[in-house]
Image 1 (cartoon, rainbow, N blue to C red):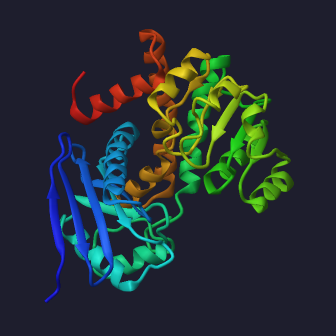
Image 2 (image 1 turned 120 degrees about the vertical axis):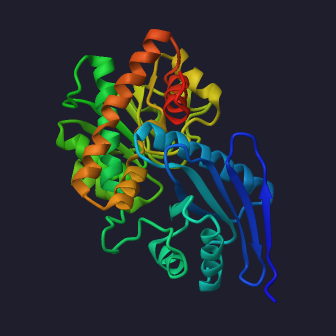
Length: 348
């Protein structure tokens, strides 16, 4: 008989958190459903060799709440959810994903899974063989798969709203932007900045990505560390999270921060540090929601133009955030949280 552990956990403010352990398949995983007020929860599957269950649990709770806020700000009919698999991503097996599919079915559509860190479309295909609740698979009929173009479009709109706040016009002509990371979304955004008449500086841990940006975009390439010191209008964090911290913020030589990376602030205090330095900060989950917008449009019946149109709405959202922040004399990230909660819970 198959032995497995299914453990329901209770946390204030969360609708359902479940730990699942199937030793026969080598699966140890959490699913967290934070909120479904606006619709079924949706969020990617992340696979990492977490040091402990506690570390994995902390991550899935933080990520699922973040998805609630991101979806609310994006104006879509999704709630916030997330899943994490505790394990070495180099040791995936069909049995592992079959067991995860069984876990996913337990939620009966209240949680819909997509890609996140170390999960590929091939992995999602294995899950989909046994579960209906999977979206965002490359090459599938009715799916764009790669959300990078839509995410980049949203970042561009957030950039335009930010530039308008600083200079009174949303034109990007002559704008200097320093990109920390030029992966799929970072590169696509940098390309749009250049096409709009801007100039870009780039760095990336991948030499090929740097070389491509230099060759195709005329980008100035700097070292991973030197990117913080570039004299520019916009610093764009588009790599790993936590790059804005007590050591890097004093080095920034920019007017604003707008990027596609998740969890850019190492701590909440770093948002205040940016405010104190007079650097306008576009909260990441307000501008990088193109990925979840793309998934939502797929959920309803994919139409790429509709996805782009919904991503364009990020301009209006950021304009409202900046207006509220200015009126209340508060940091934009604090105002953004409040706006998300208004939309999520229907209260002022």
